Structure formats: structure tokens, C-alpha cells
Length: 269
Image (cartoon, rainbow, N blue to C red; front, side, top):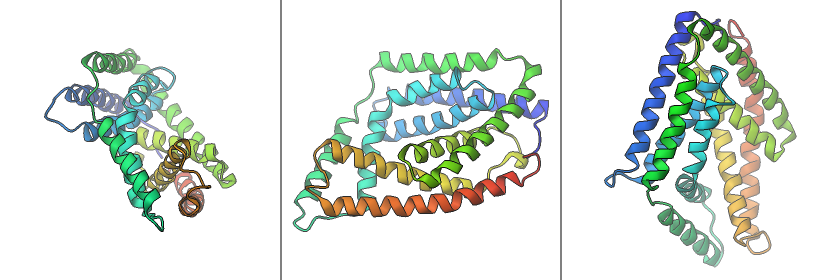
């Protein structure tokens, strides 16, 4: 991967600032009664993850990225409810007498309906303030420092990715979660760069999807546990969850080494 030029770094900053503008537009859209909350929140949070990677690119991970993270956490309930329901459908599990499956499915649907309320205007205003603060930090950076920041930022993100990918062979819960976050940050950062020299390997995006599916199963598992649908009552469900997560983890472990090896062989890595 090539070292970024001053013009490429300026381009990345312009793209990141434009992304902040889009985020504000999405947030204001949540006040429009004609829209659909779940889809709008999903778009907002998806963009937010990319923005966080972009701010880490400019070494603003402890300031601007945290501002965007706060917005994502505040808006998490509607999207999490929809994600759990989608994960449940993808899992495709049915109890012998269908009572447990019916109970779980009905509760998941109910929670998606409950979560589909629009945030109040005061909450949206606070979120817009967070985005504005994140953008201001970026605007205040000296143009002379941009290329150096981007070069160091990319190296740190890539190093963090390699370190966290190296740990997932231990199959620890937190290790998979951290690997997914590191990959999202790296992909988000690359997305603001201008040309093919900084493009990501398609296999990285595929691996991000695998890690995302694994995380979704973990989230659903925690939700089920907290609501009493434990292994004692639905052993078949937990067997299905364990097998599905195990398959995804094995796939992620096999792919992670190859993805990192391929990325390290690129020019400038």
C-alpha cells in the first residue's frame, strides 16, 4: 500500500467531512414521519461505523470517533431489535412442539414494533451536536499535518488488525468481537481514500460479513439467556446456536490469516 500524498490526504478529509454532512441529513430524516425508523437508523449506524474508521485514519480515535460512537449507541435499540429478529429467521430453528419457537419469535417481533418509535427532537439535536463536534476536530487539523496523520493512522489500523486477528484462534468471545471492530475500522478508513492503491481486498469485506454473522448469533444468545430461554428449557436451540457459531468461527479463523497475509504483501505495507 502506497504512502499517501498531501493531495490524497486532503481528499480523504473532504470525503470524511462530506460523510459527516450525510450523517446529519440521516439524523434529521429520523424526524420525518413518512420514513421508516428501522431502515433509517440502520443507514445512520452503518455510516457511523465508517466515519469512526475515517476519524481513526486521521488519529482522531479518542475524540471524533467517540463522538460518533455515542450516536451509534444511542440509536442502537431499534436496529438491535431488527437484527435479532433477522438472525432468528436465518437460524431457522423450530422446537418439536413449536411452543418455544413461537414464544421467542413473537417476543422478537413485539420488540421490533416497540423499538420503531422515533427519537424525540431533543435527542436528535444532541446527536447532531456530536457530529458537529467530530467534524470540527477534523476541520481544525493543519493541512501540513494531514499526510503524516493518514500514513501513521493507516499503519496503526493495519497493525491493530493483524494483532487482533492473531488472537481469534483462541476462540475467545472478546477476541472475535475485537477482531470484528478492528476490521470495520480498517475498512472504514480505506473507504475514504481516493484510489485503487488504498482499496481493500474483497476478501476482507467477506470476512467482515462472517464476523458480523458470528456477532449477531452471540447477541441473540445473550438475549435468549437473559429472557429465560436457557439450554435447560431449549437444548435443541442451544445446540443449533453452538454449531452455527462454531462453523462461522472456524471460517473466520481460516480466512483471517490469508487476508492479513495478502494485505501485508501489497506495496507500502
